[in-house]
Length: 451
Image 1 (spheres, one colour):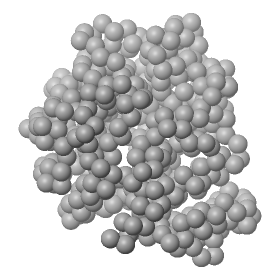
Image 2: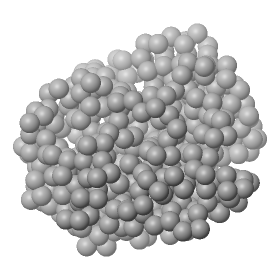
Image 3: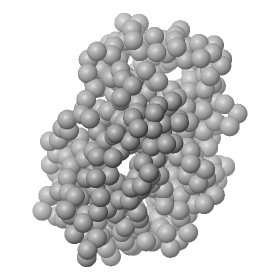
């Protein structure tokens, strides 16, 4: 009870804070980053270096009401095939700018629903990508797979293209909840997809499950987690449902009166958290779980855990190139985001250039604050001496940023000799604490509840 009082005192149950998969967060991107600067940043990648590549497919056969991603519905393949041609043209523009010998440390297809691509489209896309930058020998190729939109032929195409990690969104297995959030996906269908994926030699499986959904109770989330555990995923993301109808209008279909309170959300998270830990999963950061043998768990133990737009990762690439409408790229110099509207993105690519619409150039202070937030979110520890040595700064310069945060949260963190640490009992506050390292004015847009 005392812990909950502390959590409430610091705003856990009423704060709206970013997930901090980037810093600054995307609402602070501006129009001073365009196609020319994006091309310059591409050209500055070292020859023979490794990068990560994200491909965004914005189409879905159905629009799930809970989702806040940039997607559009389609009942036919025609717009998807047209979009594939745009992607191939964009890849060719990338080829013209990319230094020689670059390989892919990570390749990820997300959406939307990338598995609505027909088998021949998957093969075409993979061949176009690999002709520009092949997958490194130890590289990872992952795809978001919708069990409602996959079959043997498409899995065969993905396996032939080198798929070695699959990601499946589960959300919740309760039929009533699925109906209310517009995502009907039975356990049996999901299990069938998992078995088909593994039958093709894909050894690594990621899954997502949500807490904080309408009509969700501890009993219902317990049943969903137990069903998920029976599929033995290698890692699980336990995300809090972000109800942001002012940003995602489809969420107005979800009855707000059926949503759990902030206190109930915390209870749902803790219920699922215990189940994953009881089943032998390591807790990774604030919302991931992984088997001890998974690379994410290994990276955490080695102090190599990172955070990017996909959440927690062991990806150490300094460059993430995003292709497709609304994709975001990250470079040592800053962020760059493509035009969000598919029509605007397509027009720019057909005109022979990138569609970069906005972004952010990093300052030295941005980089320092971003690293403070990242290590806090990954390790729950911020050590001034370590950060100073890493970035070639004086320890006192880093302590100037850490000390006020430690004082603000003195009853829920420990602080000694420039080292701030968040104990397990108050780690639900991690995002709230991270906000105190954020120098930008917070906007309501796109920000989710702290729990």
